Length: 224
Image (cartoon, rainbow, N blue to C red):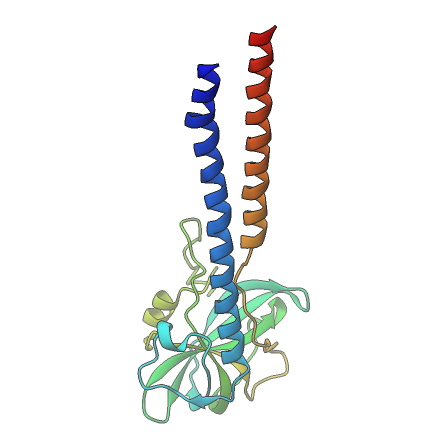
């Protein structure tokens, strides 16, 4: 009988507490993620403001702004795919602002067949949101510079290649060719914490049920 209680104290209860803590932690993460998404949604739906002099990820991610700038000829083509147009390229171009600063403009997506067409340059009034994308990982291939095919948006590498500030404006409105697909502001932030919390709580319930089952099973064996 003593061994059974040792099992409860050393195995059952600590394991149950750990699983319940993991579920509660995921609920806390859920609340944090929902607040973050709501904050970003409010920024995207706000009236565009002036371009910050020194934009930062902490203070200006998804910040809506208007700029006047000269779109330059050099562009980066990032391989992508959408339901609307299928395979295509996200076009990243440098733009020189009126104050002389040079930043990156995500102009939208073109179909794969339009890769070598003229994309329109020069003076432009652009509305969009600032973004610090983090799309690369250990498995992301290096860009094919000869064919101008990049496989993810890497802000630091793109800015270095096009000799601009490490600032990216994703355009939601600008004057350019009809072959562009300018995307609406979107929040691509996964939020699976509720599913994770439910999973941990279900595992906690299963752990408790199994522990109770084995406890009483051993008790019956000793009685018999």
